Every structure is written in structure tokens, then in C-alpha cells.
Length: 499
Ligand code: NAD
Image (cartoon, rainbow, N blue to C red):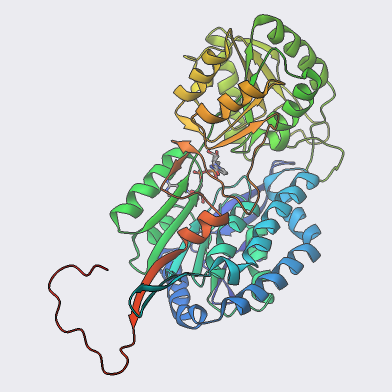
């Protein structure tokens, strides 16, 4: 298997550090396809040193030149889209059309980063005092790091490094060890686009690699995306070490189905939002909150019919709707959540626990599952299941539904289905969630806004990519300047200067 060991990308070169390795699976077949090196502390330090050496030159490269490299990178991502999506499918299991969608959303961040000269323009005021001018400019931080989850191996890294790099920083990325190949390939394409050596580095690994990034004094900032317990650990450790940090965590996204909602639209869009990518999306809609029993009964009936047509199978078959989950352990965890809902009194309407895919009997498949009569105190409701499971909670009023959402520990995404503009407006204004949809089930902000949840779905002050991304990866410097003319000198002044 040595020929198939995935290494690291440091200072423009592939580095193998195979003292420790971990299996990488093809979840569609359940077979081990490769192994990935887990970087030692020394290997991570090698990447940090490369990034540190590259920083002075890159910092002083004009933003327009940085943007031109990003533009070439965007073209290479498009030209190599088939290869990237295949690498995603092989190791993650999502269907190729879904992988193409994730790549496209990542490319849109690169397009936004191409506007660097405009994004980095400062603020200028002439005559803040007599003959005194002031300006603010936005300077890069230095070496910054990103740590990313398995569920979007292309898109989530692309949320981070294009913005960081175009702002003049150098980068060390630690992708998920479960599906690292597409991420590594994308980093190589950035190098091919003309990026100087050492500006972008990738180290594969687990906790040792992450902890090295968290504790190394050269690393100025950490962007993290992953589960909430790890996000909290990352945020606290980074903050204790004086680093800037944005740590995006897990989710439990609710859709309120109002009695006046367009049911056909609700059913078709809920299917994609709950089961697309096997529910392994931080924006997946995993809870439908119905107002009134009449709407609940109709919804359950329509969903049950529609779910019979869903196609589950291997990543490579474009007609499949969704594929396997990431590992056997994760499959068992999802099944455990379904069983616990059943044991605690919920009703399993469509049961995906025993679902098999013919010809792929060892793949990590869980069929689409629908659970009714879920209650807020059930474990399956409190936890993030991260699988193809849609739970229905029945309430009587919109206020009750909103209280449920506002009381949940997570606040990533939510949506209301209604034809009532007043209700929708009230919902948007008062719901304690960072990303809100009105008749839009997956309200993932476009690249020129910013992405982030509230409550325990995000630790830190700024959201990721978009305008918040520019602020996260730069620090403001404000210069106040006077050039004395005609020999005029003010002399000492001991009170606070005022106009
Ligand atoms: P994870 O937390 O297990 O792993 C994320 C990263 O942290 C990986 O790179 C991993 O190697 C590293 N890591 C894992 N355990 C660690 C430890 N003990 N110490 C230090 N580092 C560690 O998450 P995952 O399973 O890869 O991804 C799924 C999770 O990510 C879900 O909870 C999902 O909601 C969340 N997610 C959130 C967003 C968002 O934008 N809020 C986006 C995508 C995924």
C-alpha cells in the first residue's frame, strides 16, 4: 500500500511522513482505498516555517498580482472539475452532481477573492486636523491556519485559504484525514496557478497536527470548521494562546411548516435538504416543525409517498439522489439515534436502518428515514444526527415553534415555509439563528455575504468568507500624518489633542 500513501504539500513539494498512517475508505464499497500520512509535530513545524519564510515576499506582492493568481486558479479549478469531483466522490461518497455543486460554491469564493484590490482598499480622511490627514489600511496577519471537516473537502477549505492568501497571508491547511485527496489536489492547482512556494501548505493529520498549529507562536489565526465539541476546544485553546479564531461548529436546523405553506414545494425541497449528501451537511434540514395536526398529517403522507422514489447508491451513478455515509462507525451512530427515538416513544414512519444497495453490500449506506411525534426531550432531537434522518415535531402555534428553535443549543440555519409575509418578517427578525430562509430550505449565503451560525454553532466574532473573511484575515492600521510646512512647529502639548 506504500505507493498509495497520501502525503503533505509543503513549500511547493509533496512530502511523505509515513511514520503514522490511517486508512482512507471508499464509502460506496466499504473498502480501504488508500492510506494517509498523519503529520508529526516536526512535519507541521516544517510547513509553518515554509509559510513564515514566504510571508515577507507575499505580503509585499501587490493585491492585483495576488488576484491574478486567484483568477488563474479559478480557471484551473473549472478545467479540472471532473477530476476533483471524482476524488471527492471516491473518499466522501457524495454523488458526482452534488460534488460538482460543492466545488462550484467554493469557486464562487475564489471569484470573490479576485476582487482583492477593491476589498483591501482602505479608508481615508483629509484634514482630520489642520493639515493633518488620516487613513486606515488592512494589513495581513502573517501565517494563518485552517482545520476542516470531512463533509465538504473542497468547499470548506475554499471558504478559507483564497480569502486569507489574497489578503497577503500565508497558509497552513489541515484537511480532514478521512477524505484528504481532493483538498491536496486543489492546493497543487493553486501552486500551478503561479503561487510562490510556501504561501500555501497542506499537512494531513489528526490531533497532533491540530495541536501543533494551536500552540505554535508563529501561527497568528485559526479558522476551524467541524463538530461543536472540537470547535469549542479549538476556540478556547487558540484564545488562550493569543490567536485570533473563528470556529464553526455543528447544527440542528429546523423548518417551520405554516398551515398556509405550499405543500408541494415543501415536500420537494425538504427531500433534498434533509437527505441530500446523506444529511451530512451542517445546513441539512433535519427537523420539520408543523403547525397544527392537519398540516402534520398531510406532510407525513406526502413525504412517505415521495421518499419511495429516492435513489440511494454509489457516488459514481449520476441518477442516484444520495450516497453512503462516511464510515461504518458513523452509520452505526445514525442507526443508534433512530433506535433511541423509537425507544423514547417516537414513531418511525420510513425506516432506513436495514437498507442495502445491491452490488454494494459492504458500503456504508443508511436509507432515508422519517420519524414522527418527536419530542424536545428526546436524545435524537437534542443531538446532531448528521445522517439521512428527518424528524417531525408537532406544535400548535408559530410562537411554540419559534421557542423550540430559540431554545435549541445550535443556531446555524433555519427556514419558514409560508405565504404570509407578516409571519415571515416576524420570524426573520426574532429567530435566534445565524442563517435564515423564507421558502428556501438551505439558506447558505453567497460568497459576497458571509457564512456563520449563532449560539453553539460558532465560536468567535466573525463569520467566514465574504466581507467578514476580509476582516478576519487582516488587521486595521490607522495612520495620522502631518508634514509641517514653512517651518511651523506646534511645540509641546500636554492636553489630549482636539480640534
Ligand atoms: P470533526 O470535528 O470530527 O473534525 C473536524 C476537524 O477537526 C478535522 O480536521 C479533524 O481532524 C479535527 N479533529 C477531530 N478531532 C479532534 C481533536 N480531538 N482534537 C483536534 N482536532 C480534531 O468534524 P467532522 O466529523 O469532520 O465534520 C462534521 C461536523 O462538522 C458536523 O458537526 C458538522 O455540522 C460540522 N460542520 C459545520 C459547518 C459549519 O459551517 N458550521 C460546516 C461543515 C461541517
